[in-house]
Length: 287
Image (spheres, rainbow, N blue to C red):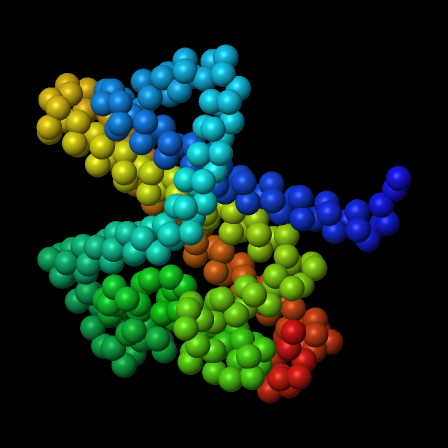
């Protein structure tokens, strides 16, 4: 019995999306499961937790299936609730780095160097970029940063979202205009796959970043309350991974936003017959 071509392609597309979603949840969930097992058993490192899982499930198929399902459940849970926390932690680090740069510039007198003394002689927007932003301005979806770095493109994206909604997207809850653009791209056959892949990547990075922070807390707990002599080694590796994964998550999240906005502008240009200027785009042409 053969399936119609359209039904076969739809089934393949749904199955492929499922695989991409598992990629963003299964492996990070397995990492979280290892950390929880390590903490529950009171062993000295996650390596011993992995060894316990391998020895226990060496010849037990039911145990292996339970580990897989448990990892997937943990991955989905962290994916659903961990994004805001990961974004806030990364934004705090970015704000602290900017603060340290400002303090260093003040101590060394770099901000008084020639060419920076007169604000009115600087290009438009340079004074705003020199100001230390509030922490809220650095949070996802980075409207403050993108509005300064790419003002024309960000204005066009906002107009695109407003035309789709037939109202100002800023009046809606959520991360606007990012969520509106992303929802529109999910309905576009040429962009849906790329949107899902971007989401899977940043989901995995966010979950792994939070896992490394949790691992650092577990290592410090082992060293402080259980006197584990190897706790500092575990803590050092966890701290290094937390810094690396935090930077990767922040960069990946920012790249996702820029990529979504770029694809949204391309879709708007295509719908207007190649004209990239979407100002005044009729509301009836929105998806």
